[in-house]
Each structure stands twice: as structure tokens, then as C-alpha cells.
Image (tube, rainbow, N blue to C red; front, side, top):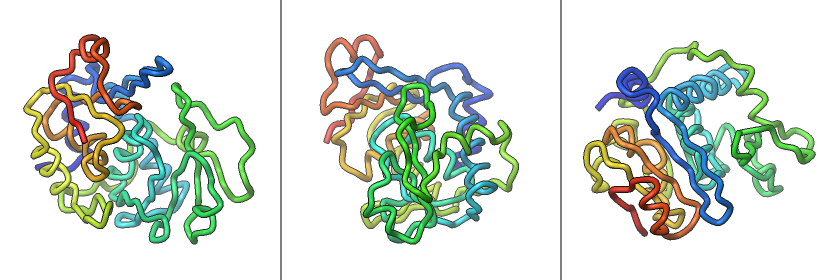
Length: 235
């Protein structure tokens, strides 16, 4: 199985305009869709920011304190493109990416950056604590092309819920979740944690399909029909 960046590039060439990740909040009506081309662009910019702006090296850990959201997919893509590791352990991270700079997180040794949950990815509007920066601004300033060395499939990718996986292992595990080639998969927010991490990006890349990430804990019938969902991942 190739690495994540290679798979993103393949999707961009074969079906770049088609949706790869869709985020839906049935309660608010919010809908954000990322094509393979958009996600590859986000991956390059985030990866460049991790290396050039935040000084991370391949193998460094990034704690993602983000909900199931298109931003989680984009940041996983960028972290894995940079050869870094996604973790749910901020105390062991080299960088913490969060939506709210909580004191408990900010107290750790890692630098803390904030990501907006705005549908269009706009910068944070609320004042930030001293030492906490808005990642959106740093990412937007980066080139569209990734400038550093790319990882290979054996590069560590995940350390979540006590489980460690390389990029190849994460993609293979995602492939074993059940959906088949080309499926459009609905993913509810209450999905078991490790499966949720795999579903946000590794799954659609591994099966050459797409995911619909839902803010709620079920898949309403209108959304199932509107989004042409073929498979659902439930807790």
C-alpha cells in the first residue's frame, strides 16, 4: 500500500474534482465538501507549515484536539504528508492543534495552535491567550506545492487510544472496516475512537471512495438519499 501523499496525488490525477471528504451538520445545515484536489492542496500547505513554520521533523508528534470534521481530515493529510505522527496524547506531542486553547492543554510543553471550525476555514475571531497562535494564518501563507521530502508507507502515522500504526498499517486497517471499492461511506460522530481516526482520511483513500462525516450520532434519511450514501459506519 503506498503512502498517504502518493494516494492523494493519484486521486488528484484520476478524479481530482470528485468529493473525497464531505462534512455535514444536520442540525445547522452546514455542509463542506473537499475534493481530492482541494485536500491535496490543504495537505501541502499544512505540511509546509509544520516543517517551515513550526519546525517539526519527520517522526514528530502532533496532538489533534479536533472533532470529527473536515479540518481533522485536512490536518491528518498534512501531518502524514510531512511524515509526522497523529496522536491523542498532548502530553507527548511536539505540537498541539486544538479548537479551544484550554489551560490544561496549554500547560504542556508543546506549542499550541488553534484551528477555526468556520465552514470556510476562516481565521479565529476571538482573542487568543499569549503564546497561542492561529494556525489558519500560518497555513494560508504556505506554497501550494509541498517543499520537503515525502514519507514512505512505513512511516509512523498514528498513536491513538494506545495503538500505534504506520501509514501502511493505517490504510490496511481502514480497508478492513468493511466498505468496498468506490463506496460513499457515512461516518457518525460517535464512532469508536480509532475507527473514527481511520475513517476521516485513511478509509476513503484506501478504498478509492469518499466519506460523509456527520456531526450527529445517526444518518437521517434525507441525508442518506441526498449524499447517495451506500455504506454506514456505526458505533
